[in-house]
Image 1 (cartoon, rainbow, N blue to C red):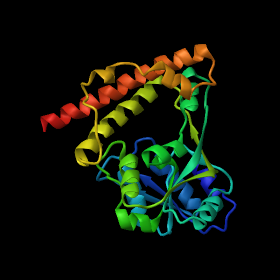
Image 2 (cartoon, rainbow, N blue to C red):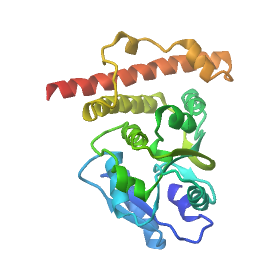
Image 3 (cartoon, rainbow, N blue to C red):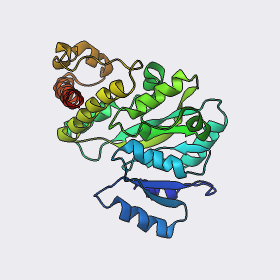
Image 4 (cartoon, one colour):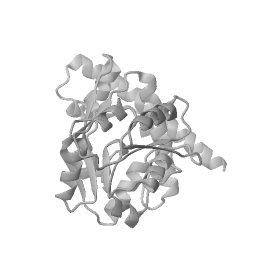
Length: 274
């Protein structure tokens, strides 16, 4: 679906699609090669040194020929006219770093999927309050990479946060492009959400360890990490949800908070042992 949505753009074909296989075991490389045989827009590369999404993106950056770099995840799709809208929006702006509008859809109806969709990707909020854009909807000018460097490929997660805040510290503009839409499937199982939160927890510790002085980290054993979020804060964020569903979301939120804490504890312990 991802490649189909990218190759079917109503454009002048003045763009390229780079698929980077990062030692995948799900047949990604074969699918990409099959598509590339029938479409000259697609190039397939391999990254084997580091098993991380950021290493894969750095490999794509390395071989890309364009002046505008758009990042997207392998399970996402884009709207018609995506390339044209990105190019037009970037050309009208003096910013170097952009976040797109992510719409989450439900591949199947589950309470976890509805929670994921309700939480969403508040990209405009991320830019305003935390100076970063998730890499699944990030667009940058090539010259920005030349100026500040690429992603920290040794991080398992939170590399997008580190990169975005590095960009902000360097004084480059960051902008939200609300009219350019990409589509992301919701995670529909608690297990998949917990795996993500666990990975994020590990990445938060790696970020603080690898970039000291720029990122603070609450101690992994701080009591607050083991307590649920204040219910009024979550209710404010999900004020339109029915109360019973909100209660279910509150339980999910707490379980995910514990998964994140487990990730920070695991990575913190591993670093202590080195």
